[in-house]
Length: 322
Image 1: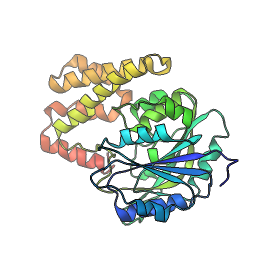
Image 2: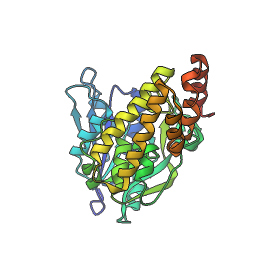
Image 3: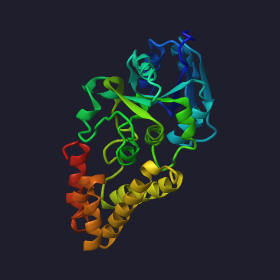
Image 4: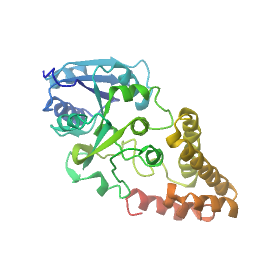
């Protein structure tokens, strides 16, 4: 173990993992070229506990610990608990069904030689259910996904998250500052916002994770949206809940304070327009269209749009055509 280098805590949340995929992930962790590592596993499914024998068999290069949750709390809470447990100077968040390139941690740790860097993230290649590569970059399947590097990126991360949890590494102090995790956001977006408010985000233009796309993925373009009702609940009501919470959580952060206020004006206008279309609310939506131009194009006609046409638009968007 290279104790002269920073300790990296791999934080792995599991929930009834597919055994084949889980083994592939464990092997990829065990084969990391970086040697000062600890693995912390949080099992979020007490009814069907993950096999400790699998972990013992495939993790032989560094120490590990397993924590069993008393009840299923979801990935956000699982990663929050792991964050509290981590001993490393750097935290690498990990999903149960991807595959890490063997130099992932080595490459990422090097970025933190720049003391301004609070979070490093990389591109991801895409694999299918049979571990066959289907795309060299996540940008091939998510056409609007744009990676960015630098300072003052918090405002952009409020709306569009370009940081994927399994492809990021963050300083321990930043991760601690993010606790408690924001319940209305996925953990990676919330941590990225906190990191951006405190320094520099560094993008690595290399696919360091083989990201598995399958029917059980939690995230994706318009995930969970199938009709006008689910669109309203997930793209308007949930956004309103999120930014109302962010306004309270980040009340002292001048960098994003005004942006959150404008976002709330935009979301509330969208909500009113959906339920009772008016010219005044449409003007507000157009004024703040920079937040999400596609939303305005869809929501301008959404109240009048037949359900079957809207479902067709959703299908094209999920395929990345729109």
